[in-house]
Image (tube, rainbow, N blue to C red; front, side, top):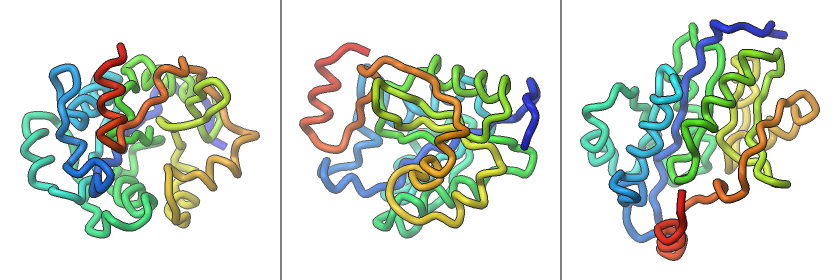
Amino acid sequence: MPRPTETLRVGGVILAAGASSRMGKNKMLLELEGESLIRRAVQRALSAGLSPVVVVIGHEPERIRVELQDLPVVFAVNSDFTGPTSGSLHRGLDALGEDVGAAVVMLGDMVRVTQETLTMLVAAARGTDAPLVVSRYGDVTAPPLLFRRALFPELLAWTGEGCGKTVVKAHSHEAMYVDRPVALLADVDTPEDFAAVQQSKA
């Protein structure tokens, strides 16, 4: 099992490939508080020191590339973006170099994930040998999630929806948990979801 290390390199994988079918338009390009949702996620990942930051794209990929053209990100393309989320996760992990010892997996539509949350996950990983660091919002566990490289083969073998749910469950007894306010657990799938986050405070 990996030993705690201050030099652990942690990358970021932002899943943003979906077709936004319930929204009716590309939700990654919706603007909240002056930023598109995808730019918002990327800026927080970069500010937290994640390197590299991989953005997994699929639906309208060129529009996402243009939106992020001035930011230092790596793009990974999931051509089967209407399939299970695991396909996007696999593409993102494949884009990380061998020198990356862990990855924070984020959803581009979890609009209240803060730089502080990401920084806390990284700090936890560098201070423990736990293979997995999980965000916990009250009784709910959800992304962002930090996986050490030792778990990458399991993630790559897994198929399904979510961010490696089966792998998270299998290692829940070994995981470290970072508690965050329940108010930060918000994602945007429908116009109603977006209206609700527009009306709420960060």
